Length: 345
Length: 289
Image 1 (spheres, rainbow over the protein chains, first blue to last red):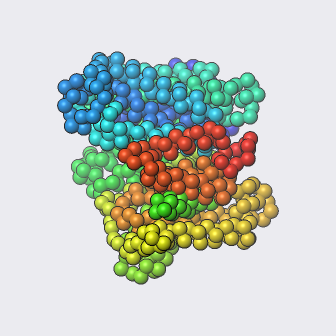
Image 2 (image 1 turned 180 degrees about the horizontal axis):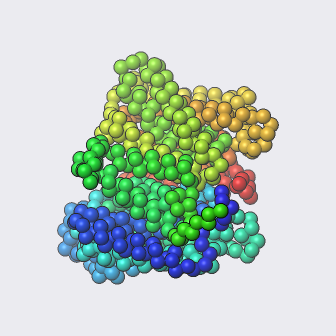
Image 3 (image 1 turned 30 degrees about the horizontal axis):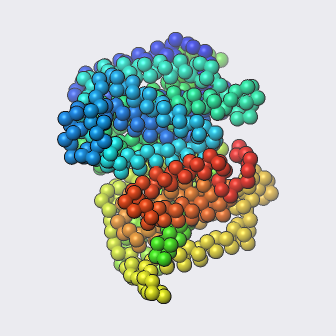
């Protein structure tokens, strides 16, 4: 690392966990109460936050790139959506006329379905990870991309298990920001605890030096597999939340745009820390919302700039590249939150 | 017969795309997602300038793609050198999305279309077999380009430097290879290759939209990983295999052809597990750090 300090925390410090929690809590509640459209935006942001946290656990700690997490979110969302949409909808919707019969009768409580989503995401990650974690670097990136492509292609064309390229309608929604907020808070705590645990530290050791880590008795494949599985479960959770915010399941929602946006959030915030994931999600969401207003021709605090459609994604993409050029370790520089005590010499 | 020829021509197209990616990867260890946008821009240019004679229109497309490739190198990749492959990969991902959105603003989100080289869509009869002209032209063109690239890589100073740099960049520099010039040239060549790919696809599918080049680039990426990213021959071979298999799957899977990609991706995962460095790699080759 450029500053010669190992990035990532080593010991539990309450402030590093509390500040992100408070920031997420306060912002979600205050902004969520402003208007109905902002409430929805906050809910989506919280889903993205959980996804970015999932990516942080694996990519940030191991340094191995994964494009496969979109697939785990897709599975989680599918399980959660399919098991909560009502029997009447599943039996009658035009997009679902070929649906496999046992799935029609599949019906669970929303909260149970979210637990299933986590299990499903974790399970698929565990199975694919058992094979893929032997790979390093580019091969790992491409192989995880293949996993995403495989699931996308399968669900996009399969009308027995899902709506194919169409949407699964009428998935029950969360009643407000509180439920996704609670789930995000749980995710933040889980991720922080995982990062300070021995698994997290071992994983960062493998990131820093692929030769030295095994010499210290660390099994690279094993720690990566554990992290991959857990982060797959978190991605499944994110998908499970997403489907209950959007109220519909569509395979396209979990493909390239989703993967790009969440990766951009992680990199902009700083992939090496949980605080980076939180900051990245907040900043990208906030910028995206402002740009969205301008794209729609509305004014913000008296400031009105006319943006053509599509300019929003262009600016987010440009700021991702700009961030990498300016500071490749992200806004937080890969550090957890800390109160600055400046030593003036 | 037609399906074999189709498979060969698709394989050839993918080989060209894979070669463009492999060239840049060889010297820079960069997986250039934005290669897709080089293909897209050349297709756009060919559609927009369709009134000009084909050769001018193509030259213009190749020039634009080359300039764009060099600009991305100068403004983004050069400054990121030394930050590691993961960062560069994410940057190229961002660049790719950014360029797509720029195309959307410039050319509109709806497809732009024009009949580029309409004579190529006809067919001729060879020994009682109907073959489309476009697949014949594609096969011929690919063979010529691959031979030309082979000559370039094997017999010219630039090729020698390319091989040296992709084997060991640091040592190559110590021996007097000018790294900036080499990298810029490899971007330029990849731009020209992208223009050829753009031309081949736009003849078959004249509907150019912002994500036009994405599909083939992703599959070519898969190809270079399968074939072995460390050598240009491996890249071209991998690209060819992917295109060839995909075309055959499309022909023989019948109604299940929609799952062709699933089978392909499954095959990729399996190949990577057996040979993480690609088919042409030597066993137990450690990744260079």
